[in-house]
Length: 425
Image (tube, rainbow, N blue to C red; front, side, top):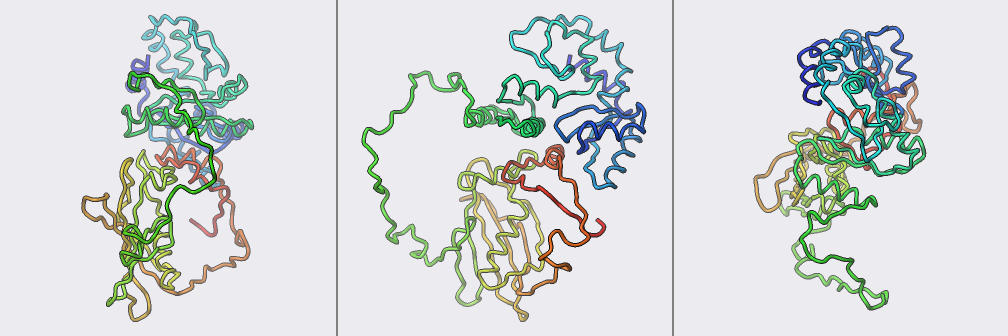
């Protein structure tokens, strides 16, 4: 069914349509479409403030331009057809003929349909249903609410890349319900390791997982706790300044969670900061991924450089140029170095950040910049916030839109609650 429907779309509908993601609730989005007659339809309702529309390309472009000019979130989706719109009627007879031999059977698991928004008898999943499934609006939010009302609290998205988990969490939050929503595979991670990692994430959220197919065939059980009582006494020995102590190597503590040590060069006055970063020691960085690849955030470089500047009394970053992303591997770590050059005649210092895989590989330059003690006037009174004349920028659905663009920000990097714009952008 998937192959035949995709073939019909590619041969008949491709090049005729467009789709766009907009950050509006369904009702507000429907009001915006009244002036377009049947040229644009609401294709999908993913969450309380996130919908996808589809239809004629020029009409969709006009809607996106109008909403963007008003400061609302609106962006074209990278497709050239219009699913769930009137254009699908062009392939109705073909689909009914191609899928005529489909013989649906009764399911043993309740089937919640995004066409009806409720439980549906699967014996009705014939050719007509699968045409309607492609023609009508996908009522994902409504179906999610039906599942929540039925007591469902665990949602596993079986797909090549998670795009609906945020919609589930958004709907659950609106309903005042706590759920576990996890993916299965990810873009660029389609193997068994990714699948087992996802199962582990579900297990960590309290989901019962049968691990027997992947564990060795041997007796298993819970590991017993120690038989002795806790005496509230430290077991670990206190550090004595041995070979593992930084001071024994002539280094000083950098006083920062990402920097391990710092040393000042005797003659030049240069300062070298060194550190080791991995997902084991800094697991929160895993919440900052792009297309499945974990990267050190750009603001992370700003933080590293500013801390180095503060160490020598230069708290202003005049400029910072990023040359290459710093990729964090799933296993292992990267070594990071920051070299703070000697001060020039004006007191400024240049700074360079490099990294390489631990124990091997060549050093890669990631950032260069200039630090000074100057204080720059921001142009407005920082004691008044938001600044006078600032215009609020809508943030509803921001992270849903970022997922569409490949930015996979976890809870640690989902802190934007409000934003403002000053002047023209």
